[in-house]
Amino acid sequence: MATDKYIAALEISSSKVIGAVGIVGRSGQLEIIAVEQEKSADSVRYGQIQNIEETYNLINYVLERLERRANIAPREITGVYVGLSGRSFRSIPIDVSMALPDDTEITDTIIDRLRNNALDADIDNSLEIVDAVPRIFTVGKSETHRPKGMMGNQISATYDLIVARPTIQNNLKRVLADRLGLDIKGIVVTPIATGYIALNEHEKKLGCMLVDIGAETTTVTIYTKGNLVYYATLPLGGRNITRDLMALNELENKAEELKINFGNAIAPTTLSQEKVGRHKQSDISNYVVARAEEIVANIVEQINYANLSEKDIPEGIVLCGGGARLNGMMELIGKFTGLKVRMATLPSFIKMSDMNGQNMESLQMAAIMYAGAENADEDCLQMPAPEQPEPEIESKTEEQTQVKKPDKEKQPSKPGFFNRLGNKLGQLFTPIGDDDEGEELS
Image (cartoon, rainbow, N blue to C red; front, side, top):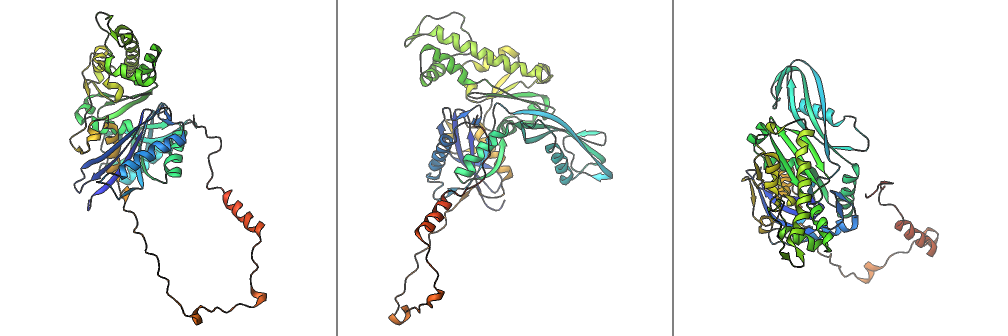
């Protein structure tokens, strides 16, 4: 890489909008130099933008704060990589194959054609394909994870098609491209990108599960033999616990404080009658434990849905997401499964220079940025164009300023008032672009 490149990324979730800027150095290492975050209420639900105007304001505010940073100004953010996840995301396994002439060497071009065949697969028209992740390739009769360079007369593969409702990407483009004028450099499936940086090759080869507990959804991805074999999104998350606590006649902000400061996913051996403010500790515990156990039971059940058992994931479970930081959540998952459980951490090959990023849940953002850095062909930031000086007006002699009037019959007639008014109204009501008719923001 000849010069450093600036990467910008956005994570738009149900609880917050995070924006970040990083530098990809000549060696390819990513350094995140600026992170900004803004809390979101109901403008995004289950990973899908519900309110275009509110989401636009949140993202614009985050980007403005980033651009004011001393290590970024006067550069302007013109493009972003965006992470996607949500309730409608899931995977569909599909097999594709290609016949080849005898003794053909497998090249990148052949692998790309095979992947394009997977992306062209017929699926439910209420969904669209966001990505295609390979599980295993077969060249001739030999299975492999690295087909390039092998020889054979046939290649086949099993891909996991990551699919979601089209509305998710449509609404995202309405905000970023249409309203903010940003170039969307790439769409990143956040759970897949997170697995890439949070799990090591040893864990993925032997078998493990990555669980991202967010505000409103929990994403489960399972890896065996080095590849993704299962992807599912559950409509449950940390906010479910918070909203249960609102039954104590508290607003959501206060209920969130009670959960963080006094909640524990593990049921106490004895119920305490002590009070936390005006609430019994036992009442808080009952709400938190009941919902936490429901979330964990649904997570564990995904192993069965994947037609696997605990022995297929001996490297256990890796946790990330704000909901995973609830007191006792890691211990509760270990108790339910009997597997080892650890919290995901930022890998050493990504440097977090900004204290803001160090003090917040930024693993998913780092994953989006790293995916962008791997594919970056150009900068996401640009220096503003220099202002052009006003042209000097030279003084002219009276002789130079005299203009010969054209003959009367050649003078164009001036448009009348109603013609000018009609032109202005025509400009006002000229459509900017075709919008998607009937597209719901649901």
